[in-house]
Image 1 (tube, rainbow, N blue to C red):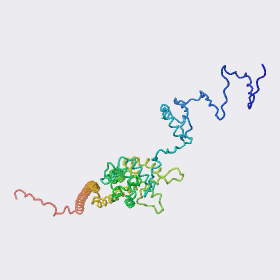
Image 2 (cartoon, rainbow, N blue to C red):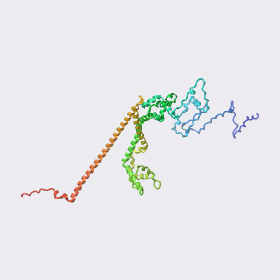
Image 3 (cartoon, rainbow, N blue to C red):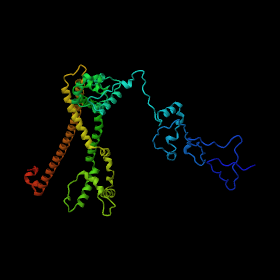
Length: 460
């Protein structure tokens, strides 16, 4: 044999075999060496086997690698690696590959491709609806308000026409105007003064957007905003009361428990003692009492070594000297729930209720003259107002009856104590008079001694 042929142009000689190894084996009969890639193409992907030492936990298997026809946009999520999962993790049970179908995958490739899409120009066969449709411009509303109203009309109110909604407002129909819809209407609708402007563009109704057509339809309802507010107040009244009432009841019960707790009273006495002792020589010494807001500050006063607070000291003192006071919290069952109550929020809610009731009374007075034969506002609200007054009157009567009963019980106790005191004083007065008579001897004077009749001797 002659020498081997020279290497191809642009290629160097093949590397020599490694030490201890023979030359590379010849290609299998009938097969040549792998063909080089065509110009402009990437080299073929070589799949390497996963080492056996790498095992996925919890029986997880490698996910399938999909063949994508064209590059698509990315889902920018943060992955959860198997190392961060547990045996109860949701992700170890999913089998999303079973949901795949050619239609789904092709739709993803078509719709989310990153290739530039050539827009089709409209054909000349006829006028296109999209290209020839005149875009309606807003006359009064701003874009944000129009969008909000359009979303409401196309969502919660999509099954009703504008006239249906207007009729529901006049009738106070709660089957259509739910509490959530009323809140959205109150948030999105312009003021009554602004609504008057929509009456002026009523002749241009067909040229208006849907949101402005709706406002034109309902703009002739007088006092629309107050009407919606009163209706919303009526619908939320019981819910609001039920939310506030438990907090008020808990606060009142907690105050009563604090006032009646004998153990807590002893603790306050101990605090007063300690405070007065510590304040000796200052203007705050010799106090007769202190505000309850001082109690949380007990934990802010630390000893000289900065190891114990005044609260710790009092607790230790009570534990060693007054062990019967340790269970004082058993007499304060409602304090734990009452301490979470915001007095400011309760006051704010009660003030809002009072203001809404006054506005409702005004709206009822102003609505005696019906706007339309469909107008039921006066009828519905007047009845609701009467029902509310009856409930409040019944509660007031019950409260006054309870107060009278408590007052009568206190008066009976006071009379009983007075009778006992008078009886004691009377007995003390009798004893004092008797002792004085015995001491002076007046109890044994002749005038006070009973006269005895002497028996005459016989024979005389």
